[in-house]
Length: 260
Image 1 (cartoon, rainbow, N blue to C red):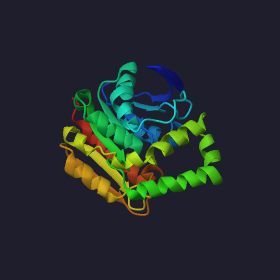
Image 2: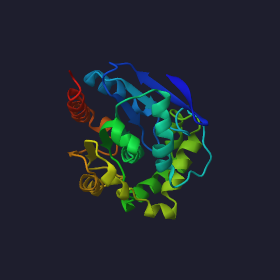
Image 3: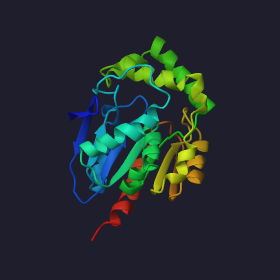
């Protein structure tokens, strides 16, 4: 574990060493995630694929510095176009495979649509990503707000976030802003050329298979889909073995192209 100054914010990170010729797996967490919420999954993927890995908590999350609230409704664009390029530069990363969960998946898509992303990203793994706002998402996030105010959600999140109110209200406030109903990334998808694996649970309370279809129809690169039954919003927790195997197979296919 460590902390790195990225721009004006100090970010928490964890690194896993691996062969220099392999792409680095960069794990991008969900809207209420952090380094610690991934648990041991990054280490498991790195071990299975023999790739180095980088996991970091975005500003406002985990043990990273807090950020001002309210978050701008463009916060995922800002992370993809401003912060992630600085992270890549700071750690001297070459080729990468981005593994993004929920908000992290949306950030991965946006970064992959840039000129730098198209030249650097060997593959995208998207768990429960969003490319537009759905009614089901808003309803689930409204329930999360009630659970945070009245239930034990705040106490659970405080185990992972030093600035828990910043983490929660930054995410919750943006998604429940009436203007966020118009949030949409589909215009960026055609510029995504990297091979993509989309993993979606059928019982995800935050999104439907319409997200998967939009990505499959919108990106330029090849797309694989894994739709899991009896699985909610976090396939790497709800269906760990199947998700791990699918990601490892996808990543190994990318690394095989660079073997001598």
